[in-house]
Length: 400
Image (cartoon, rainbow, N blue to C red; front, side, top):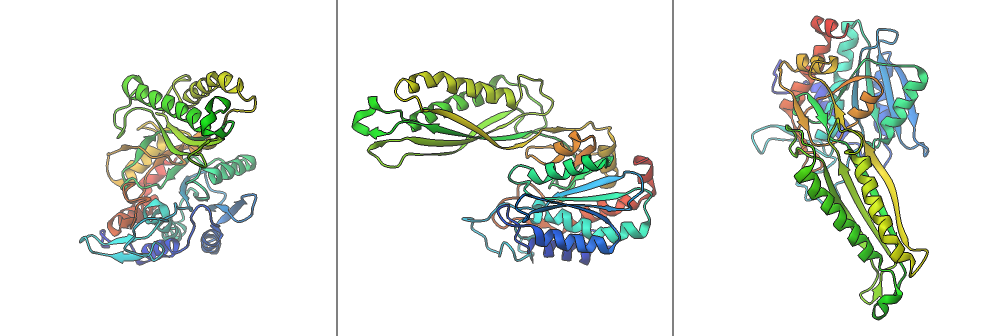
C-alpha cells in the first residue's frame, strides 16, 4: 500500500464529510445521519442524543456491542465559519490540489477534524472483519467549536446508561503525534450598564465604555502578571496561563455618553494548577475588581454595574506518558514521540469521565480555521494506518 496516500475509501469519506456544511450555527444532522446509516449497516449499536432544538445531534456508535469496554474514537462534527476569509478554493468543495508539491485536501474542516472522522468511518468495516476482542466506540459530537456542549450531553447520556469505555483517542490535528496535555479554555462575556447623557454633561452620566475599559486594563495587567510571575510548563508554545480581551463593543454616537458596553474575554489555564491559580480564581479576581468600581457608579445611578456570563468552558487536559491511552497511541503511531498542544479539545471532558485519554489526529492546527484549510493526503494515510493498527494482535495486550 502507498503510505503517502490514503485509501480511496478514506479520501472519499473525508471529501464527502467536508462537502457538508456543518458550521456551528447550522444543523449537523445530515452528517450524523450519513455516519449512522453506514455504522448501522455494520451492526453497530447506536445512541443518538439531540440538542433542545432537535437540529443538532451526537452519535455514539459501538462496533462489537457486548465486548470488553475498548476504545473511543472521538471527533467533533462542527466547523468554524469562513465568512470574510480569502479562499482560493471552494470551502465546501473538497478539492485535492498539488500546487505545493504535496497533495492535500482543501476544505473547511479538512484538518479540524473531518479528515480524522473520514478515516474512522473508512476503517470501520476492517475492524468488523478483524473480529476485534474489544469494542470500538465512535463518538461524533456537535458544537465543540463553541463550547463542547454536544460532548457534555453525550457523556451525560453514557453515564446515565452505565457505559464506561476504558480509553479515548480524540482525533484533533496533531500531525499524528500523540499529545499529552493542553490548556483549558474559558470564555466570558461582561455586560456593563451605565447611564446615558449628552457628552457635555458627563458628571450626570455613568460611562459604560469607560467602565468596561477599566476592566480590560485590569485584565491586561493580570495577563502581564501571568506572563512574568505565573506558573510555567515548558513544552507549550506559550508556557504560562494567558488572559485576553477579544471583543469590545459599546456606544451609539460621538456626543452621547454610552449606556451599554460589552467585552468578550478568555482565560487559558495550564493543566494541573492548584485552586487559586486556575481560571476560576482569575475570574473571581476580575469580578472583585469590577465590584470595587460599582459604588462610584451607583452614586450616579443605582441600576448601573457589571454583569458576567460564562458562555464557553473546556477543561484543561493532562495525561501521563505511561497511561494506557498514551501507550496505545505511541504504539499505533510507531514512534515514542509525544507533544503538548496549545489549543483546547474535548479530551478533558472524556478524561473527567474516567477514561484514559490522548489527543492524536491528522493535519496541523496551523491550517485549522485558516483560509484554504487543508490536510495533506500523507497525513490522512498515516491516520488510516494508525487506526488500522487497532487490529494488531499486540494491541490486545495494551487494551487487556
